[in-house]
Image (tube, rainbow, N blue to C red; front, side):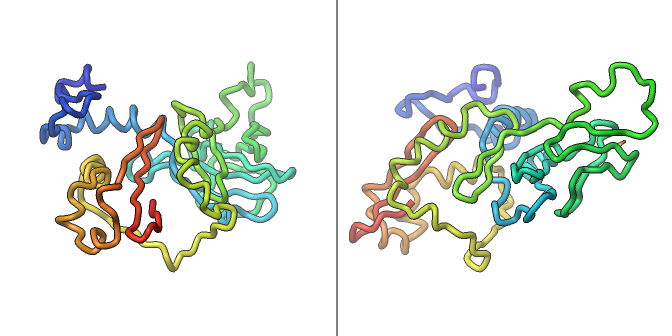
Length: 249
Ligand code: FES
């Protein structure tokens, strides 16, 4: 990416030769669009929780990276209890198939009545008798790669690495966590809306040099000298060792 985009001439894998990015890296619309395609389309992202999926057969619509990629997807649980992640866009004229979670035995488009199995296979469409080469492969709903990781549902539109590779870099650091007992607790969850370029926020989050100056409370808790950032394929993990030997990630 750096070689092709003139705004980013000074990126170097060797941090000793790296510079602060120019301001345009955060304000260029063309670079922003390029990053969406190169960074987020191939990435694995959290898209929902297993506990949100319907009991029995049904559908649960989600959006892949709302307000960035806005890709409408739909989790479907079929008669065999198998879960699929599919495009939520009708293959006829692009109508959104499900606006809200519901129990159902098939997916039916409310625009012209096209119907699909819960695994995305095209099933029927009215007034198509006599049509040639119909239905074809492109009439099925495209499937999207997803993985259920201890109840957290991750999806990727065009993964650059498989999920196992993506998550494996983290495993040595979390092996003592009781992951199989994790439960989502809405009362412990907080969301913040930050008016900033996503990369600026990540820049801040990924470097720990500001911690002694900006977060004095955290400085008292963490052994800042042991704060580390681990880069692996498709992800980044930060580890901080709490004073008194309690680790935190
Ligand atoms: S858009 Fe779905 S059937 Fe026409």
